[in-house]
Amino acid sequence: MITEPISRGSPDKCPPKSFTRIPIHTHANLPFRRLVGDRKALQLAKYHAETRYTAVGILEELPLSYKVFQHYLPLFFAGTSTLEEGTGHIRMNSQDEKPTVSERTKNMMRSYLKEDLEFYHFLKQRLYLQAEAIAKQQ
Image (cartoon, rainbow, N blue to C red):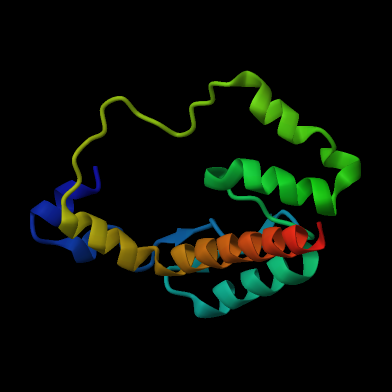
């Protein structure tokens, strides 16, 4: 578990500095392998999100994402808002018993995932701007 090395006083060993992961996609669906803290990969991901994707949805903002998709991609997403509203009970990413995580661990992970969080907030802001533009047109 990630809290163990941190609680032993060695956050630098969790994860190792050379750890490679593939969360940011930069070209269609082909992942761009990168090292932690790679600003060039982050900028490339933002560029590709802006230039190659009409719209990008956010799970936490699923109803808003559907509205943006319906507007920009009506052929594929017509009627999706009725799917969301029709069930009445949607459970998204929830746990009944969440493990406790120390602030030290949270801060270390925020630092480690800084570029991923920046990319997430960039996409979320883009979604809100698209939704705002749609609302002004209506």
